[in-house]
Length: 391
Image (cartoon, rainbow, N blue to C red):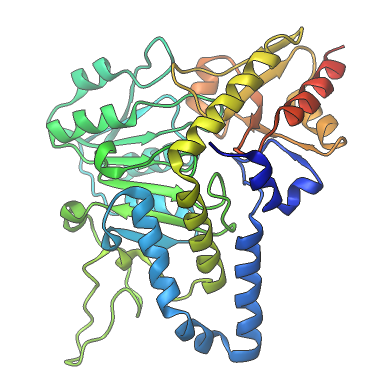
């Protein structure tokens, strides 16, 4: 069982704010902050390239930690600068032709959806939405009925950004694998919050963020590409790290997932990311999931008792993201009023999840995302402030 007070002792930001925005960026861990600063100071007195060579083994261990997080081999993981970058790198490897079909869900992240539409526009492929079930999740029955040889990709956001919905990612993976359809999974909100074993998920490509529930530095993320699927993707543009020059003068691209890495990266951020991965793994992802789920359930129950407040979460199983609106009070006004009390929440608008928000007649929601360090007294503080706003 996780003791939130232990986590709070490692989280200096919690001395200053009540943080309900881990889905945007979790408050960083003291060990992560220290590791980043220590390496930057080492670079300052040693030289950046010299300092990088000195920590080569530690950098290698970051890939090992990422692989343990995903339950895969280290050669299937690239360490990159964000989930967005990871998703873009993975998606860019797919090639489509006229008549090809790309399937996605109503809750897809807005920038992902924009990329799907652009690819379809340029290639003659079609983007098709899989209907949602009664809980708002991607409908497995509808997906199964839509699969045919023309489907060249299923792209799914596992935990959508505008609320607590959890899509049935592993069940989608089973359908994709049985039909031989490639499967790209956006796991930005999942890493550090729920178990993310890629073997169980059945995905071919997965993108994940470091700054959210893992509480790593901003500018960290990872890309998983299944080893057996790697050669089906068009490789990314080369640089001297991903495509080193051989003794015979040829440039040969790496065979592993590090073909997606860039030679010019922040070593300090990568080292901090490794610390964050190790920290979450030591706590145990199952324990983190249990703690976050219980805390989010408590928050939803208390929010539902506030007159004029509507909890907007969908899903049968839910994440630590809690969405709501307050009658007569614009979402940015709610956010600003809470910020004045040093309570952090987010406001999500149509651009983030355009299809789902439009389908439900919403233009904005307030999002309060809990973490394992969130206490009942933090919930009391938030709920008390919202009660005052409601009156």
